[in-house]
Image (cartoon, rainbow, N blue to C red):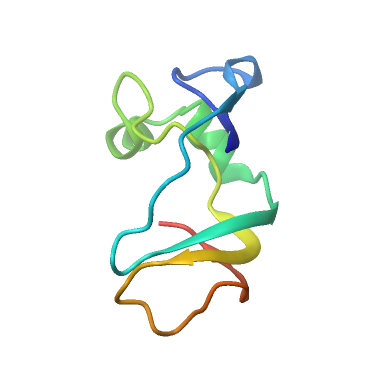
Length: 97
């Protein structure tokens, strides 16, 4: 799958469009094919942290999570074996953790 990733903190120039491995959902997770997402202040704050607390949460010297973004809308692609609230094909929106 394609994603915009970053492996160091900095300006928007640190963002790279790359092919990444498609995640496999755990037993209690769903995999969502993203149709729409946002870029918000939180994403910019994690990309170029100005406050120490952000680095303590997101990685002191380099980012822990390589893909920015938390808000999404999409379609459930795959579900874990313990998921019974959603089925593949459901339209969903929300926040990632």
